[in-house]
Amino acid sequence: MIFSSFAKAVAQISDPKFRRVFYLGIGLTLALLIAAYALFLLLLNALLGDAYVLPLVGEVTWIKDLLSWSSFLMMVLLSTFLMIPVASAITSIFLEDVAQAVEDRHYGHLPNVPSFGIWMSIRDSVNFMGVIILANTLALIVYGFLPLFAPLIFWSLNGYLLGREYFQLAAMRRVGIKRAKELRSKHSGKIWIAGTLMAIPLSIPLLNLVIPILGAATFTHIYHRVSDQR
Image: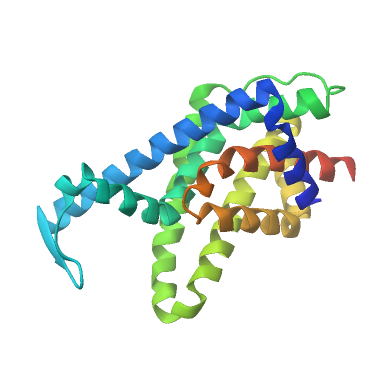
């Protein structure tokens, strides 16, 4: 189910309606990633000062590095971690458009659904980003005790969180929050696995730019697949 849903999502890139959202999603993902990276460097600058000496690297000037070519490489590396909250923001902004494009092509027999509204999407995005940031901050403690298992913990934790959010938003459009939670609980194993399989490529620089939109399409298919199995 998971892989066939992802294959359908990739195959729909040729669809003009989906392609428009896909490219907009990539552009906004990159913009949010740059903004998150700039905020990260500004935070470091506030905590550590204009310059800081790193082992094997030497003196680093955060603000100057923000405008340097070396900063691009640093951003690519940090995208491994920064893309998780970025992906959560993208799903709240674009999931409705992605889901509509998927349903227009694959589930055209279904009636239209009312829009969530931009402010509800922004509110949900901010709330969920807070959960992700808090969970990953607490996970840093676990990484210190289990460094060898850090990647598995990172993927599993964020796979659970992203799968939960992506599926619930896709389901809410059709059946409301209560039924969406029931379906999420009933199919929690599939959703967790699908979220983890999404979190893994999100930690791969450059590839992670296309994953949020494809993930939204994939979870739309997964929702309809599990809903049809009721």
